[in-house]
Length: 315
Ligand SMILES: Cc1cc2nc3c(=O)[nH]c(=O)nc-3n(C[C@H](O)[C@H](O)[C@H](O)COP(=O)(O)OP(=O)(O)OC[C@H]3O[C@@H](n4cnc5c(N)ncnc54)[C@H](O)[C@@H]3O)c2cc1C
Image: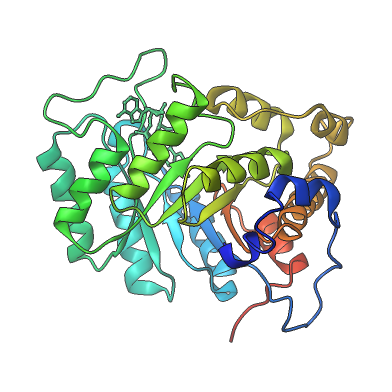
């Protein structure tokens, strides 16, 4: 994110600028004064041969867009450790992309987590997305005996292992388990103070939610980039279910937008691309120039949105 842009006219807070300033920038033109945004993409490790093929088709399609990095998730409780490692290693070996491996604290001792991190370092991986992770569904989170308790502890542990670039999670609508929004912001600051260099947010659909959060981050003295996580929706019903679990709210207008598309996946996908592109353009109009896309291992929506934003394949 361009903090210089964010801080321009520092006496006008981001939210006020959003409310009073121009709502839309023109659609992107080849204008050096308005460069295309920086993107990164998230994938998850595939469970089957068919899903593996789908993942690699998506990676190959998105690779020429030269994202800053591509991240690969770590299944709940570290259940995908081997598959995450295999996917990240293949990204290092077979692509021009910079991979970031997600790593969590749950279900493992510090030594075991450190061993995984050392394995990444040895495989040439230099970027980790450091997370606490979650307990299995229906259970509360309890740190593993001898394990890292919170993501901030993991960040500090990783710093001792290698000179990793470290990204951490942030929650514009507050983490569901946090005692309060302020506690959650303090937790984010601790992760950055422990050595993380970027926060990537949980997805959200209302641009004001992110802008208000960013104002609070800036007021708390957070200067590291806080990169908005963008989830293009192709299946609204699934997005509603998932959002209930992770604490992302669904604004009523989003339901209206997808109304009547229940049996019409083609229209749904186009609507999803338009909605996400507009969300990004609203944020761009407020000085945000970096975005992290939750691809769900599909390239079509993300590629389309990137194209609309002026991101073109590099030779
Ligand atoms: C971008 C992104 C990527 C993700 N990728 C994955 C993934 O690959 N695999 C996966 O399993 N999950 C993933 N998650 C989900 C994440 O693991 C969960 O949201 C988890 O519940 C919190 O992880 P965290 O790293 O934010 O935890 P933390 O930052 O440790 O915070 C967890 C909770 O504890 C509170 N807290 C933090 N420190 C303290 C403290 N010292 N004292 C008291 N309370 C404290 C926080 O406010 C918060 O409520 C991802 C989330 C995001 C946003």
